[in-house]
Length: 442
Image 1: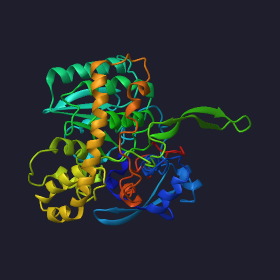
Image 2: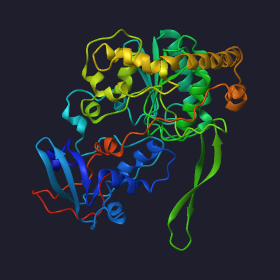
Image 3: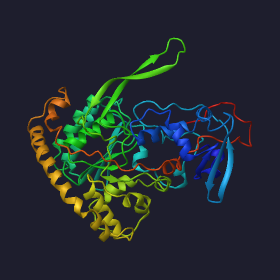
Image 4: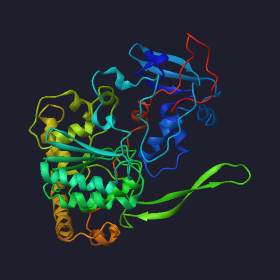
């Protein structure tokens, strides 16, 4: 939001033009090529900040005026916002949704102190640092940086784990929109060869709606060949998908379109999932974001620890604690909800009655999967092929080992997501003339 509209910061969007938020989201969704709800949500907030899009979808009647109904701490207000500046096109292999912009304010500016780790080094392709005895690894694109190749980073990460022996490692892919999928092999090898970390409860991956393309491929490989436990929100892509788009310029209109030329199949052909769903759900709520709390990292830090008193971070991801566990994550989710039971948020006795009968079947299948993966891990640790060998040759024998389910949890409601859409429009400033540009800053 532009600094001239500071009084609206934190307001909840109820209506845009003639549409409530659910209908506005549904209209924007028709313009988005997506494979799941996470992918649609990622792009919807971008499109709904463009006056031209709003007019084209008949959400508003004029590009120059965007009437909105907002819920503020003082009650409902109606404002009319206007185009402010050219939109910044989202492109590249790293999400730019949370970049700081000159003369704009952000909800997290309401809280003093440094940004959470996942927002401090957005413009750095990859890095790692310590949070106590946890090694936090952020990979923002699957590609080389200007100063270091991803292969060298993977070796440096392996050396760090071998030398320092951290208790936990968290690999954050939330800002990763992809890159070159053939470069993921060194990262996978690094984790497989780090036996102190590649075990349940010590290796974690953080994913979300922006996790896409080659980042999805990295997620798939980590899921199949390591003991990783995913935390966060569902990815914006899936394992079997089309990719590698090529640009086509139409000869008469000059309009640019893109068409995918490859079909990538990381999952079994009968795997009908539309996303990778974390075993531990830790959605980013507005309350957590504005207070600079990272629910995903908090969940990892607290994983395996005894119950403690309620904290702001725990309350920020309370929706995760109330989420009914899927069959694939019943053990970890049940543990987390038992932890919440100690704080009086849920009744642990009821959880055992509801889900206890499902744990046995899951643990049996998990044991079968571990038996199959164990042979591959030992083989890779003893004699690892060179980086030039395709990952399929290294790991193909276990493609059928990982259990799959067709069931997916109900996606978050459109209202839950759109309530935290950042306002990218602004009313005319009283201190100067009204801007004449017809497009807002993204």
